[in-house]
Length: 307
Image 1 (spheres, helix red, strand yellow):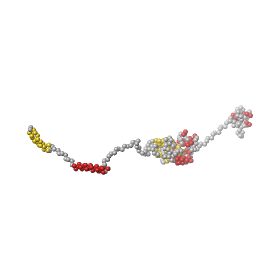
Image 2 (cartoon, one colour):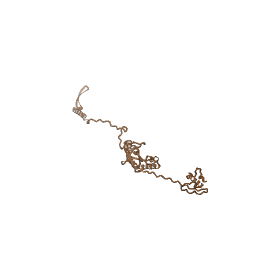
Image 3 (cartoon, one colour):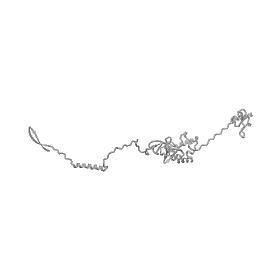
Image 4 (cartoon, helix red, strand yellow):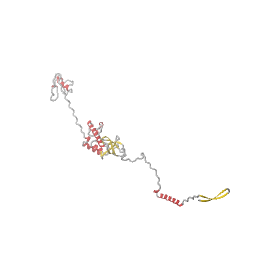
């Protein structure tokens, strides 16, 4: 508390009082040392950060924006590649069309048609069978039937060996990637064995005349099958069926009262001296082609001199 003297004038009389007024002390001034120390500390940290880059305040960089699939795509892997990427795949056979054609599903889910490279099995439609493409098979009804039967056998063999199975396939850098019908040209491997070559070895196919790297090995396999009469190469033409001999014409008797014809002479040839006119005429009627030359002037009358 603080004592304060005050003068107050009331009714022209000056009177004095001592009044106690509450007093609050002013806040103590901030010590200069504290301020200086704080400023010094800030200066030292700034200097330290300038000298040590690792302690510098990190500036946040803008987040990276993921590239859209259209502008950037990851490299293809075995599980994502389709028929137009790469040269080798593991695929699943979904349908066998015939001995050298099938449909498969690729790792990325695409389905495509394959044509076995370097081989040709017989057609499974009789009207499309071509014996002239298979050496030693005649262009006859029997030859076509033979090849048609082996086309069916080749298809059955492919179904047994491939249908529903996971197999390895590969294109050939020395061959076209796709054939004239757009089918992917490949080798098929089953448990490491080349299925194309096996068709040749077992006589289910001929070698297809085209350019590919395994042509030499395929030609050898085809020659061995032909030489050993394996499969479709084991063709034997049927023996020709002999034509039946014509039935002999029954000899007729002379209805006009004449007798039966005399037996043929030793040379099996009648002449007018052996026959009466009626008998000669009967022979001519029985054999209009006149093999015995009884009608010399070809007027339908036999042995006219004997009449």
